[in-house]
Length: 391
Ligand code: PMP
Ligand code: GLN
Image 1 (cartoon, rainbow, N blue to C red):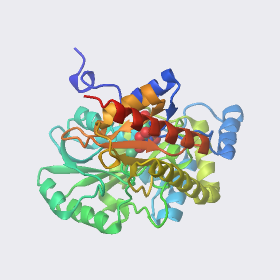
Image 2 (cartoon, rainbow, N blue to C red):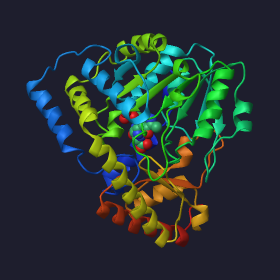
Image 3 (cartoon, rainbow, N blue to C red):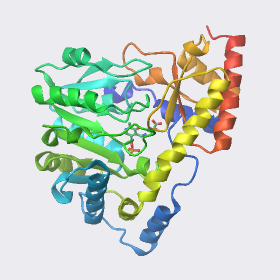
């Protein structure tokens, strides 16, 4: 019999909604990916490395030039001092990094604090590693934790906490005071933090991403996870990194060597070049996305939707109740894709317990025409919902 941890799971909501969008020819504002091909210079480097470079197994922990480039990037952008050889491992996307971190570090029965809404890979991987998730629920519109919530969650049984910051789906970029509070509790309870920071470069306005690993006492108790897919808007590339102190990295790399062992060397070469040559891209990309966020948000507000703020990621959320829509998020999203031709993500799918059911996530990393088309179709979904509400 298949293991129930997986056999009991539905298909991911991202695949479900993208599948419906493909079949029905809907505009896809669901799964998070840009609808442009990504920076040409980096794709050209990958093409050149494929044609003229080395395409056999690269070193297990990643090409030295990429590990060097990751260390250089984090030194420039986040002031981190990471040793490329003993503290950085290249993985096949952040998803593999998460799996490697959970499999390498969790022992059967270990308690792992996770915040909901959560990225959907966390719980099955934590459980498969033998961990026991302890859920902390965050609620709109602020989606923030406070000291009382953390103190209620942390105990002597806590071994790990998983933090996704900047946060998908809420678009929150945590301020220093929240990170300092979390760091304080990690140190007090001797807890390791698995920090999913894939959205670290996608931050808008005055918000600033600060890595938890930079906080006092955290260097030796953090696994910092990044993704080139998000940094360069090349989500299919699946090139990720794990940064952690040497003792942790030793175990992380042993887990990685039996998950994927290596990551395509042509893509590693291109990402290394990108990290060394993309100052301009890292300045422009968030500004362009911020403009797209504003275009989608303003368009939706004009159509009567209540749109929540977003300081980072590719996502904004709409509040159905505050928009005068009585339907639950899943019903509304199914109606939107089937009857109005636009796909979105019901945020309830990212809760395991006591879901918030009135928030819908929309991806704005799209061309203006796609966003404008999406706004019109969401307005239509809203009209249809008012005319014949789902029971
Ligand atoms: N974590 C979060 C929070 C994400 O949003 C994503 C992808 N969107 C991932 C991990 C996975 O990243 P990758 O595609 O590099 O595996
Ligand atoms: N991270 C992407 C999102 O949130 C989805 C990735 C996936 O489909 N697994 O939309």
